[in-house]
Image 1 (tube, rainbow, N blue to C red):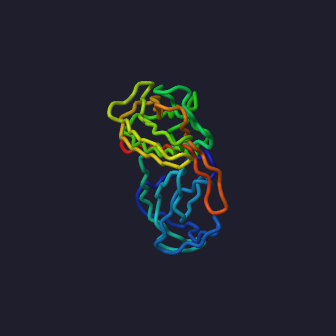
Image 2: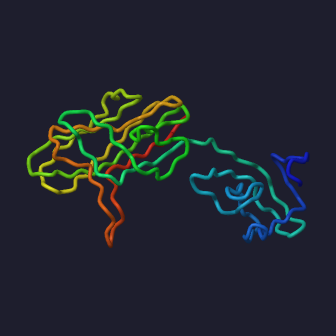
Length: 230
């Protein structure tokens, strides 16, 4: 059909007289293959299930394979799109003063759909209201052998979220110490979260480690925000 033309649309049922070989999209289809809306070519099908951030839209199943008389069974399943984002930092970060709330910043958006890095770069902004799961993984290094206490928590729109603090004590000089926490939080459209930290000693670093010959880069912070319910 010519783009923009008016014609019939099938939302449930069989559609016949199609090329169902898969050849037009560089694939080989067989009876029983599930066809998805192509994330790369508008109006085309693919038997390869799309991966994030592309939407997975099931359109039909192949019934008969033919270059001219193929048949498919149309029964589209259009999922509700949920938001998500993964953000990290390849920069070392420190606190400027003891016992002072400091927002953690990000240098990299690993993947994003409806959750974006805001301004300043410590803010993670959601586009849609919903219930969100927040997972944080940070990597600390002590710069001397004295004991020091470090605290992490979540702030929403600039206000600390109650009961989100996690604390850790470091004593080993230059040793790596990972810290992780998770929390579920209701957010409205355009709300933002920040991961905050503080320490009773400035001789501590959120430490990013460069890639080695046997391991990839270790970011100083990785935060994953996933919408789990509208």
